[in-house]
Image (tube, rainbow, N blue to C red; front, side, top):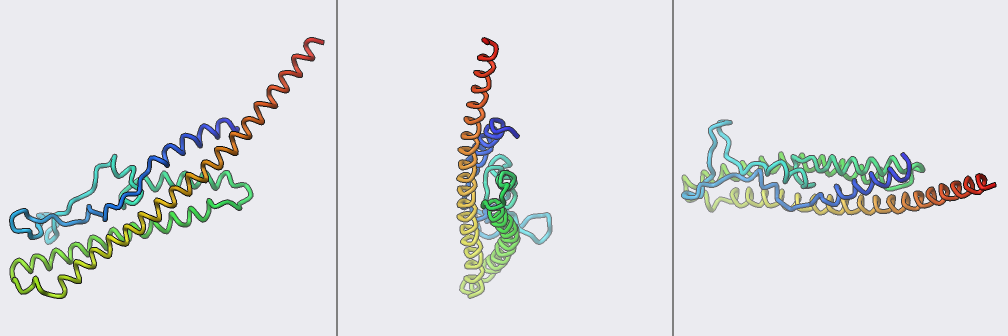
Length: 205
């Protein structure tokens, strides 16, 4: 791709990546809804034996959030990293390591989503038992289950921090490429002007 066209593409890509956000949502879609009256977990009719959950954010919100388990945002970030690798003819840039970091985070976020869902369900089961027997409210298992949920949320915070840093590193590398292509484009423009001047001189002769 010619420097000028590549410059336009990279500038557009940068805008897309800068628009992606790293939000510490604690994977709230896995949280179980509680009845406003009893404060006990609400059961759902289907699947039987499960609980009603907060559910996913809207598609437009998820499309911009890098830390969400169900998002296209990380695919955009991966495409940007692929562009860095494509431009790295000497294979000595950070593109590969950035890609490895994103793949690791992607896998960990998906695994954590499942673990968070199970932890929330375990806590809900104990809370339900607490509603039937007050003695359960003092049970050590209840405290441990609540702490497990908080542990999952703290871990997600860590992943969100890391993916936010990764996005910033990708933007920095895109900026470096943009400057490189601007310089190449300016050089090409200068050569074109020189050739045009030579042609004009020849015509005058």
